[in-house]
Length: 274
Length: 274
Image 1 (cartoon, rainbow over the protein chains, first blue to last red):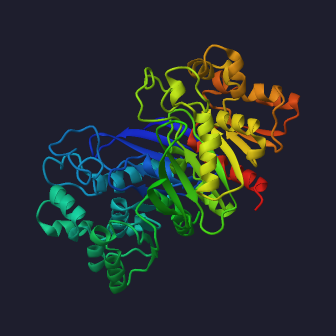
Image 2: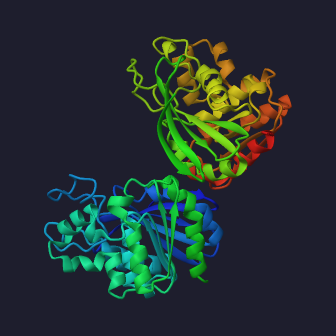
Image 3: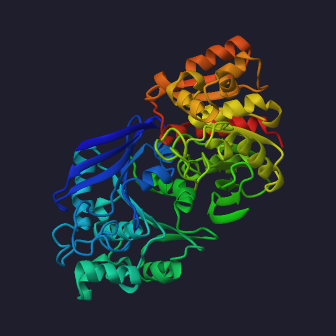
């Protein structure tokens, strides 16, 4: 574990780290905020397309609320880096910056693009063993909202809470998801089911807490890619508790995320009892 | 006045603008945050070296506090852009991204690098006439802290309050300032006096309010470039009211700024009475 930079911030420390990952076989980077004093738990933040480990920690304004609630955060990069696989750097929505939190099975991505296990096992283990936190929850934005929902629904006992901003809730049936799942998982759509929050709900996966979602109504991706209403339907039908807030005039940006970050940190804090 | 982008943020709007400037003879860009409801005044934010109109508005986390205090902010770029003057793009601390808030008198910069008047007259006029705000104050960071102090000390009746993070308080006698003032103003050091906060205080310039400064003690530039203690001495000797907060372990970054932004917004709000 290599500490690259540390900045005092709201009496705690905002930090940037790198380490050699077992799952991606590359050096992976992540950022953290660790409040001063006793820390009661950790939120894993998953970012969206084109992001890396910097976007959330510089733009979301979360540190103030994390400090108030005695929570740390860990925000990993969104894909392996430093590779040069065929097609890896050609588009913003596939390959580098777009790992989609799946374990790729299709060559040439299947050697390194293991972001599902990287988050749910390796990064989770780092939080437990290196940062010594036992209470762990997960949230994310857009592609990372998809990642947070999928990882929490498949591993409900590992995560105290789950929430999302503007998540891709039904990736199997929208252009971003179809492109990513075809490229990483192949044409067999049965394999996609494990990575689709709506399908997981329909197949009986649940989280014991209420899933909190904020979605902007002026989000350019809402109608074609995000389709929040499908999550509401699937949750309602399956009995999953949820609270979806549709936010008038808000878009897909970090200005939207920053506005409702306090609500999400409070939500996680309420389920992370020290 | 051209609105480039607008994002709903803390119930107000974070916006990006461009306009053709009379003083720089170039297109200039700035960002704003305008809270919802009645606005009681405007803070002008001046950024530091290498920054443009985006850094503050994306990283400082000010919008939450501005919304709470019914204040707007306007954050301009730090130099003219789109030119290709000899030497203009060769270093991070001179030329583009480093206008130093002076009116250049030396060729080839004297045609465009009129950042002092651009801020104090043109941008100030935009706040009055376009955004319809009468109560205006000023703050900044590093080179922008220098700019805020100089502009407020020279025009005390135009600004309701002034504050700074990590300001360059005595540019005439530190490497950044000597390089910039030589390049923009020439070798005659008498011309530098108008752009040096410590010299202005010694020469009788004052602001009627207490000047608020936060400075990190782990700031790599403190000893060689910033020299906060010289401001304290000059203020003490001249009778200028001030409050300098030396902040243990904090550095020069926006993580430091974000931590104390609420204090600065409250300070300005206390002097901007609607």
